[in-house]
Image (cartoon, rainbow, N blue to C red; front, top):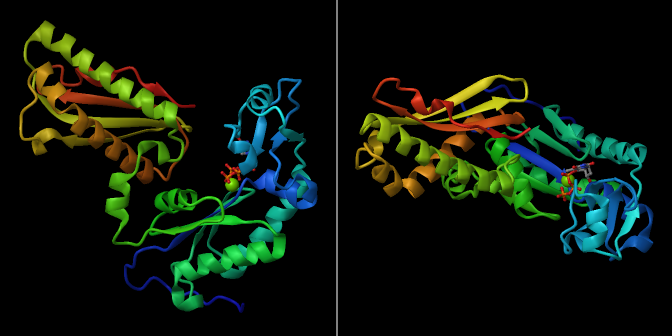
Length: 315
Ligand code: TTP
Ligand code: MG
């Protein structure tokens, strides 16, 4: 592969982003270096007798519900035959450097996220006639040739969807979201697929919603019917900055003036909030989140009554 020629952005074109993520990285390196481990459940992390936690587990171990960040003691309960291996960070860095070489041969526009994961902006790449899909396929093949390890790749017009796409067909997957498919894809995306939003967070977000309904009910009891004009989501990022996004509720067929009205549109508004949250998360470049809030702005004074809702702590 020769040197890349980058063409300037003369006209506004959709970006072409590839997200690469190695499959069960630490465990895969351990299997590579010790083929006897193949086909057996393997975890990399602290000892099951101490207070250790797992860095990761291979797919064989994941069948038993063993996963990253789980305590080693819980992992051995779930899979008694689990083989524990101490992490060897130097070795993982060595392999990571080889992967990085492959990326650099494709584009200088690399944003590494960790040892096994990076975004590549290939918008201006001319290899493979600029096909991001073929470039992603090439990267996966080169990584395998040079390391013996598999990677999963996601291709999309933005960072957010590229990362979700790489996870879509794991392991050894390649998933492409074309520029025309983004709206539909984002709309159908379960919230738990959003990086940083796990199952627990999704459940808690639903619970937040319930809290919002209760609060609105209390408010109406005290002050009488109050028209809800807007819905908003708020996040506090790891650097303590606040960001918010709001939408007027005019798009609803019915006015929300009392608690029963809000309950009627619950599922619709809950979906709307999830979409808004995804949009906001994308806008802030998927920064780690500390808090997440949800609320209604009321026409009555004080209009920000419901803004002081309990917020969901994420970090
Ligand atoms: P991940 O890419 O999150 O996980 P993974 O590569 O093991 O598995 P997957 O196939 O789902 O991508 O993380 C990369 C490596 O980072 C992982 O192999 C071990 C390390 N790691 C930790 O040490 N602690 C953690 O909590 C996580 C999530 C990862
Ligand atoms: Mg990985």
